[in-house]
Length: 476
Picture 1 (cartoon, rainbow, N blue to C red):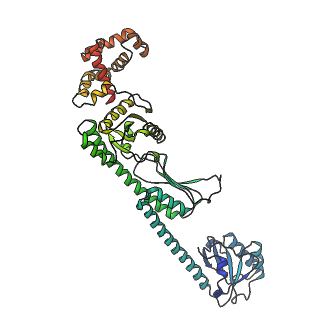
Picture 2: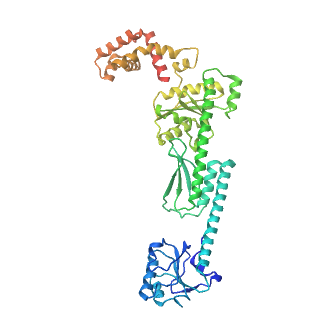
Picture 3: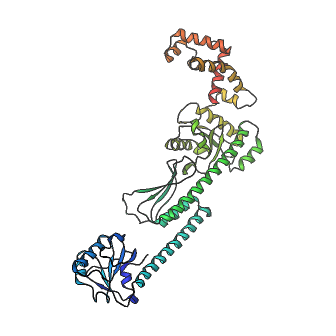
């Protein structure tokens, strides 16, 4: 710390003599100002020790005014040089300094003002150098914490210790890491305010480093902010690459192109033990938010699971006991992060084929439309879709494209009418009530569907074909 007035007066080589009644404070001296002006206030910024010989302070009024102006400027003390214009400090100056509680000290003729200024300047240089050393050591500690295997959690623990306060890191509105100050540094029940430092990651993730106030050492915070930014950006790139790679692997398994020991070995390389039962959790978000799934970090309580990207969905593979819990936590996390999302949960199975079935169950559960959808029995549609040999998507498109095109041109409501007709077991009256239409309008639309597609909803075989086509369309 820079030298204080009390420390300065204690330097024996200067032979400074305290005068007046004000006590020297421990406030660090900002600088030493030498002046012979009658009014020094315009040239002071506060925190200075003002040295003068009083050459222009020839009257008690001028002496008192000089002291008041130094005090108004925030000066710490007046050092009066004797032996030139004054043989001793003028009584009027001492009286006014006592009144405004401004310390005064006598500078003997043998002590040059520059010697006082040099001691203060040297103390500032030493303090600055010490701060730089501390900052460099802090840089090394934070870098070692991050790169030594401790990751962001360890870095924030070290930062909290340096600042003597609590720190935490938030991304997508969720705390992803945090450190805590040493115990006992904060009284229990104290209300605290938090300083928020934005962290740039190249993503729209609202990443923020929060620091409990008060704290010091802002320079080390700037360095920590840079380290965190680089680390999170690197993590995002790694996640994106790993999820694409894992998605390609799961795609081969789902489509039946990879099975048996080869699939077990490939999954084992990702850290997934096929001998245990696993659950596939599928996350589907609004089309404008899909890009974020490539890099989306999972909350702390979801760490250690395999993630993948497949068909614009994020897949999370979790051990059997945690499947439902993981789905619920992901749903809450995504909602808090501002995503329009649905979570589908598959059943728990072992081996690669089990992951395949769990994936189809999770995908089908998404069609139920809830925020979090538990698994259910696979429908015939999903079972047929699991075989790449059955061109269901093409058959569905062939059957429904005329209806989709007609609705787009004429707002005919044919797809909606067909969906309701099949869902309501072919009851024209129930469809009319549900859509608030006349029954003849419903019959007319059903006839249009038969004319456009070549499949009559009233015929059982055709109805099954249209039902499968609609379900394939929903699953795709």
